[in-house]
Length: 209
Image (cartoon, rainbow, N blue to C red; front, top):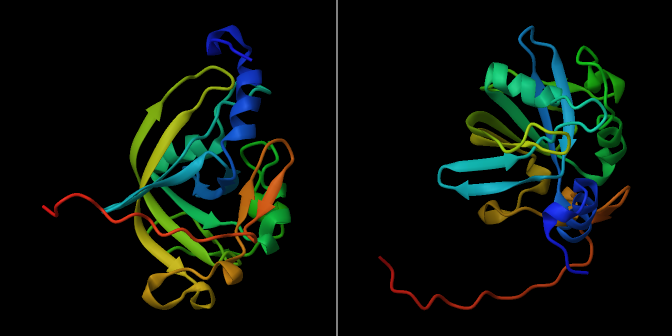
C-alpha cells in the first residue's frame, strides 16, 4: 500500500499507527476538577520525555463519539496537576473499566472499586494498588488538533516519585518480574512483558564534553 496520509480517513491511519507503534506503555492518569472531584483514565499515547529534569508526556485525543475533549485534559487545564499510575497485570481489569467514556461527574475510582491514596505534593489522588506513581505538574500543553480524532500533547514535570520497595532493585533499577507491567496493542489487544532479551549498546565514539 502506498498513500498520502491525507488521502485516507483518519480512522484508517489511526488503525495503522496503533497496529504498528507498539507495544505502547500505558499512563493511567489521575486528575481532579475545580471542585476537587477525582478522575482516572488510561492513555496509551504515553511515554517519558527526559530525565533531567524528569518529564513525561501523554496525548489525550478528542473523542469521536461527541467531538469533545476528555475530562482529563479539562482538569489539567484547570489545575495544572496530574499523577501517572503504572498499570500492572493485577490492575488491568480495573484500568479497562476506567477507560469507559462517562459523564464528568462520575468517579472512576469508585466505579472500578479502587482505593485512593493521597499524593504528597499535587492534589490528584493516586491508585493505592499501583506500585509506581509519578506526581506531575503541567509544564507544556500543545493542541495539535481540535477535530475528532485530533488531540493534544501534555508534558508534565515529575515532582515526586513513589516506588514500592517490592519492585525496586539495587541502583534504582526496576524488577520487571515483580512489576508485571502491561502494554497496549491495537484494538482490544494488550501484552505482558514476559519474553525479553538483552543487547549491550555500542560504546560511544564521542569525546566527553
